[in-house]
Amino acid sequence: MTGLTAPEASDVLRSAVSFLFVPGDRPERFAKAAAAGADVVVIDLEDAVAEGRRDSARKAVAEYLAARGRACVRVNPVTSPHHHRDLEALTDLPGLLAVMLAKADTRSSAASVAGLTDVPVIPLIESAEGVAHAYELAATAGVVRLAFGHLDYALDIGAEPTGSAMLHARSTLVHASRLAGLPGPIDGVTTALDDEQALADDLRCAQEVGLAGKLLIHPRQVAGAHAAFRPSAESLDWARSVLAAVGEGEAVRVDGHMVDAPVLARAEAILHRAGRDGQ
Image (tube, rainbow, N blue to C red; front, side):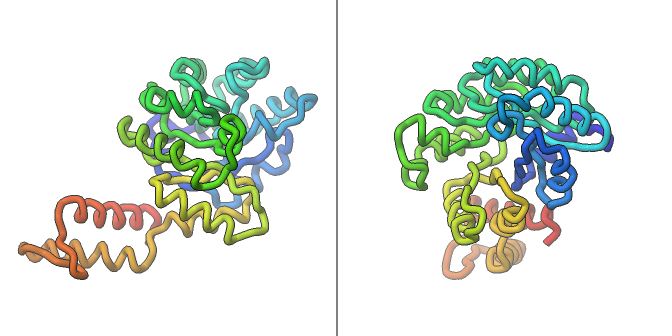
C-alpha cells in the first residue's frame, strides 16, 4: 500500500471514528485488524508488548508499514527508554499514517514527535498533567486529534473510571479541541469485550459530551462504534426538514421550535456527516 500525503493522512484521521488497537508483537493480526473495518488501525508498541518483545515488535511493525500496510502506531511515552527506539524504527515508512504518543503531558513532547516523524500526531492524554496542558497540546503544530486514556487518568487522580468522574477531563479535551480547530477527541477503550450494552453506554456518554471517536480493543466493537456515531434516521429526517423549511424563505418553526443559525448549522452538520458515511 502506498503512502499518503500529509493532507490525505490528516483527512483520514480527522474524519475517523473507530481506532482499533492491535499488539505490535502480533504481526499475524495486523492484516486481520485492517480487514475488520475500522477507520484506523493502531499498532501498539506500548502497553500491549511485553518487555522482552520490544525489539521484535518494532521490526514487525517496520516491515508491515514498509511493505503493504497502513496504520497509526502508539509509541512509548517520552519518559520511557523505549521512546526514541520506537521513533527510530518508524523513520521513512510509507505506511505510517500517524503516531499516537502515550502519556502525552506537554506541548514539547508532542512537538518533538511531530518533528522527528513528519507525520500527524495524536497525543493520548492519560494524566492530570496532560489534562492541564490539553489546550497547549491541541494547539501544537502537527497534532491532528486528541485522545483520552481514561483508565490511566483515573489511576492518576485516584478515581473510578466512570462517566461522572471522567466528565471534567472529557469536557476539557472537547473544549481544547474546539478552540484549536480540531475534530472532537477520541474516547478511551471499553474493556468489556462481551458486553454490547456497556459499549453502547460508553459511546452514548462520549457523544453527549462532544467526543467524536473511540479507541477499540477488539474487532467486534467496530460495528457498534460506527453505528453510534452515524446519524440516526430520526436525526436525518429532522435535519432534512429544517433545511427544507429554511429553503422556503420565511420565519421557520420545525416541530414547534424556532430555527435560528445554530439550529441550521446543526442540521447541516448532521447531513454532512451522513454524506461522509454514505447514508
